[in-house]
Length: 256
View 1 (tube, rainbow, N blue to C red):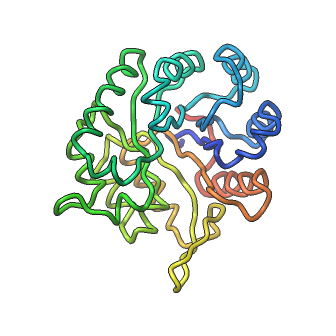
View 2 (cartoon, rainbow, N blue to C red; view 1 turned 180 degrees about the horizontal axis):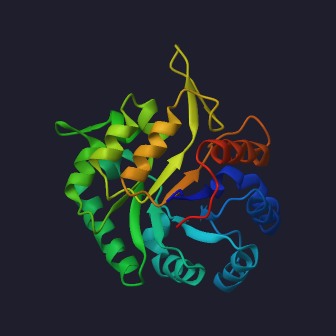
View 3 (cartoon, rainbow, N blue to C red; view 1 turned 30 degrees about the vertical axis):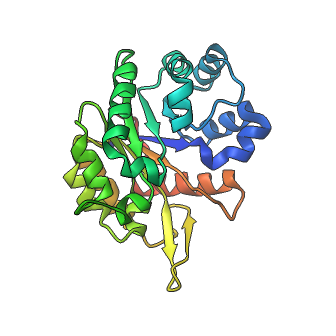
């Protein structure tokens, strides 16, 4: 029996969510996704969103909350995520100036983490590939950052596709940060000789997804979160293809 839930990062359906968020969430539930990760709340109040998720039997995995929202709207974010039952809030990335001012950034994140933790919500960071190609001192930035933070204060939402694109090994990073990676972003990719790339539905690219999923499970990951930054197909069709691949390759039994 599988141990990890299957969720969707709603940024993938940003156009559909902007047009009719309630209908988009209904379709996500009908496809079999068990949980969703938000990237904005589309004018829902906390109570409205809580009720909608309950009616659709969708779990709120958590939310992506950017630096501006963390700095200026932290109480609103806490209130929303408490209402909808999120267990995680994740910063989806920071700019180069913030990356290089590492001690200041870590201090700010530690304070955010403390505020979320007081409400039972864990705080984390989502990587792109730049955190694996940029250095801080003599380390890869990602390793320097997580070396400056404690496992209690900062979790990793490891986007395994971007780790791979940067030329690093997602499996090695899952093993290195085992116990600290409750969430992973799962997508596929095809890289081309000229340095360009295309993000793809699961199973249609070059990622060794079965091995990555097995490593995530061994590392204590709780949620596999499908995300596709840009879809050539209609986005709902893309997330259906990825769900179908997961049904076939990971199984779709109830989580323990």
